[in-house]
Length: 394
Image (tube, rainbow, N blue to C red; front, side, top):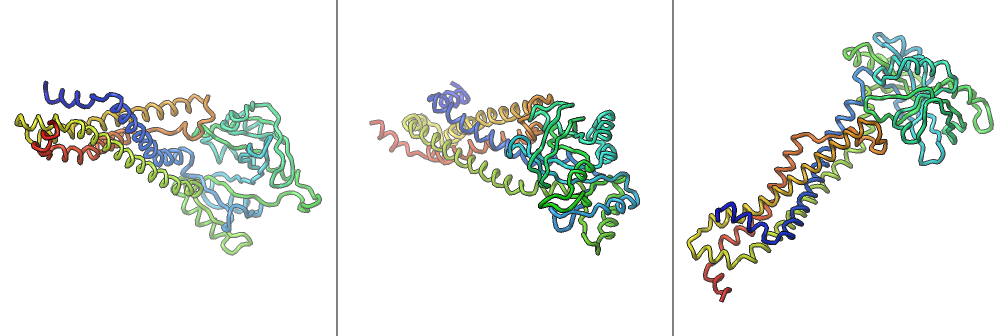
């Protein structure tokens, strides 16, 4: 019997207990890998979803405050601005309140210039410009509701108090692959807001937000300073920022959530360490007579200590291998499903991936878990008094 063979035989002397302990380690490492991948995945989605030459301009007091429509003409005059568009929130409901999704009134003339990375076909942009109630819908929303190009849909109970019907003329294929928005003509909304009880303003001489595209990344900071300086003492003070900054502010609320998940994940690992330590302690207690016999045959503390540590470390390593490979397989499958476009329920998960570095970190954590869990029981077993142990055999 070789030393590795002895370690392996002792590890599986209780197969069910060993397998269950390995599965507990595997599950905890699976969760750790998923949690460690989350921040990087969010950063990846952010990088894919934004442009380094697109700028948003909104009211300094917040997104719920409108900007005068006249600001658009002034922004167009700022040097190095390539194209200008705008958003106006509609807030309609499709079918039932839980099915509400982002809808914005925009200028159909410059959609292709401001959002060229959304890859909207020229014929769909042309149809959007000439169709009064035309709408461009994100592919994520199209899949969610089973809509198709040419279909008529109605959104009700909007923030403006009007119900509008739209004809889908195209699909927004954003680079994230999960666009969940609807764009329609601002003029259509403006014409629908005539004077009526409870809403005396006719038309819509305001917008929620201005979007513009710079000629190049080197002009972005100068454009931001020019716009905010232009309206510093105006009736509505503006706050301009890059698209990445704008989206990051929305995602900032997830950071606390991510930190909580990280804490919970490592608490799970701590709990698994205790479980594995209990398993190792049980194994040492069961083998006290064997350890005593080995010592009486001349085995020193060091070989026994290393043998017991090897058992628990191998247990953690095998469990970690199962957990990391399981996480790798799942994230790869999610990414593949997201690329096919046949799994709308995945949402952002379709863009998540696990890097090799995370896999190695998970495997290292699992190995350390096994080592730490077996350290105290192995030390106790190695220091076992031979006389006292042999007395228990009598």
